[in-house]
Length: 131
Picture 1 (cartoon, rainbow, N blue to C red):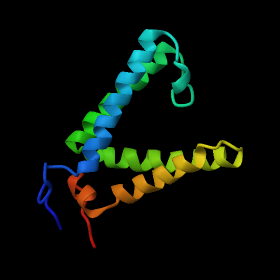
Picture 2: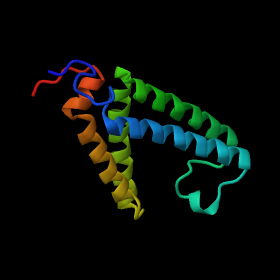
Picture 3: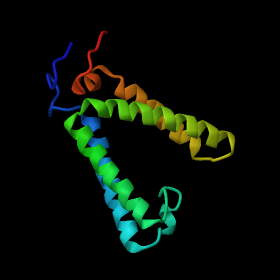
Picture 4: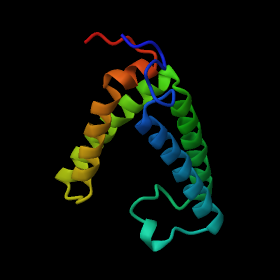
């Protein structure tokens, strides 16, 4: 079993760093949209709401998630796993209802589940790995 941060190049798996930075960048985008006052046309499919208050609250949550992932908080492993399963369920329903982006979102969450269950990622989050 790997000890925490043992044999990882920068102390954390590379894609965990990318995902954490992605959360922070997404939060910055949501704050920009909230300050701008309306959702640009190219973001309409991806932004949760055009309500500035909701966007700011969501941005704060995403910054917290990004920082927690970056630091390797054990609870974040469970949050990511839980949100991936919930997303898969909602994407299945959206796919059945004819949403064309749903199958790609579902595939992405399956990849996230597989990655989060890899040995190095589990060791980074302090989970015991028995392989």
